[in-house]
Length: 215
Image 1 (cartoon, helix red, strand yellow):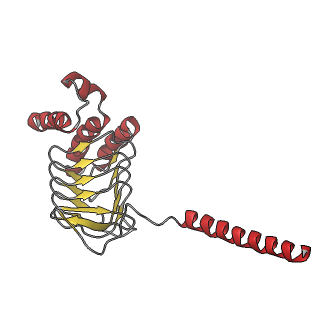
Image 2 (tube, one colour; image 1 turned 90 degrees about the horizontal axis):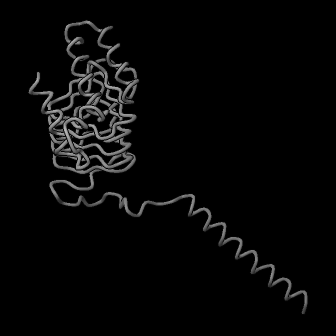
Image 3 (cartoon, rainbow, N blue to C red; image 1 turned 135 degrees about the vertical axis):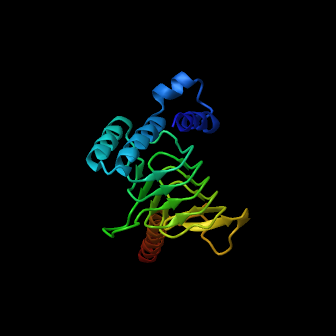
């Protein structure tokens, strides 16, 4: 157990250049606190002490802003960066060396029973505000872009972005046929441009009518 706790600390230094000392990391990193609280809560959950496990998880949620259901399985060296608003559901399975950023949701899609939350394989990364929903798998060494909503499996060594999430890079190669997320359509801006063009057209017609009446 102590080896696992030390690994949880060491991964902070590996992932966060702002980490300066063990003392600072142990006392001030909410992601680390949430992981440690979850390890104890999960231990009680496995012993079927469900109420005590839920109490521990809710105290951790109150103190850290990170909600990890005690039934979730979290692997070694999981790093939650900042972490505020992170939600991890009951049947989630998180592999080793996984990174989660603030606002990430690993949730379900309804009231279905059984496995209803995502599986994140080793070295997966889920960026800020992304939502990964349902009993799907994020493959090993894959990345989910900030703000994405992922509803389907993601292959290994892939990058997925967008709403709904689409694979844009796989095995280091850009996937053809996907939406260019650097040039997303802006319907509000398009509507304003249409209105501006319409006003210009009406102004031209009014000016033309004025000139005709003057003549």
